[in-house]
Length: 194
Length: 191
Image (cartoon, rainbow over all chains, first blue to last red; front, side, top):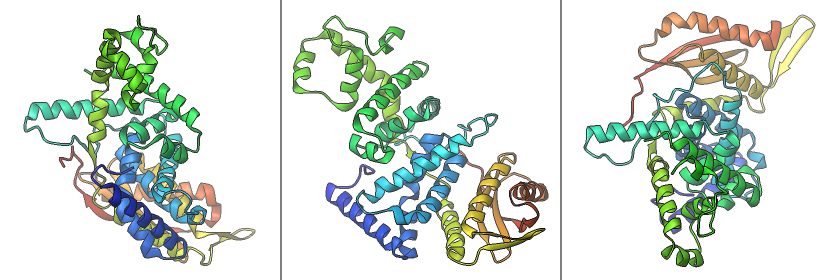
């Protein structure tokens, strides 16, 4: 569950640091919690955006997630990784955003803060790639939340089955079934993407 | 890959099912299946097609996502407001039949939620932070240029006051709504 640039040792150290920061925050150290906010907001935003599909809603979800995290610090017991706990908080906040969405408000997929990794130097190619990014994102946004969450966490965040099961609080067998259905549904949606 | 291919139970001539292959492609496969794959044109063709279809998802996974520059600061401001009141005296609101006491985190959460709902009708306007002070609630907004923010503020204030009133009745606290920043329009951010 890393950004793909850390060594295993760096990742382990960061997981330990994050848990220590959460425990410190739980003891009343507000600066420890603020450091977590500064460190993890980008990641939580990325997850939220991929779940809700709308930048403004994703930012609201992230703010709600941090407020919720602060208020429920007492529930963090250190028996799960800090990142897992934060993923759970932000996925719940994102789900809450989806539930309270007004049916008449369309998702604004033209306003995404999404940029393909790497610049081809080819404006036409870049435009096509951005269009593809938007369409795939839209296809994921059309999946039912019960399928969308495991798919985002597995295929876009690169988390293990064990980590996802812990975040979503489901067993591995149920998770595999949900993910399989999500992949099939997305493949069906992707036939529309050239 | 045609429509039929999406049926995960579809059986290939070699006896493998399409559903298995999707799992193999995305989660990896055993040495036993690798051996089978070397000699099976049906599975190879199907896996190639699945891989082709899945490429856009792989590319999306590599896409960098960045929030607004000030999201962290907005979040910290909101948290400071929460902490300042956390454990402190509740907001006390005089009502016809007595005093309504509301714990400030609840007031803050309610105000944030209602602000978000009201601002859904005002494109370009967003909540930067909410603060609960001794006897009032303050909502700071950010406008994305070129939203006519100052013209909208009175109506936002009216709508939000009405929304709070629906929940809190006559004890609705004094509400102030301020424009504290104007942000540049968002575009496809090149990272």
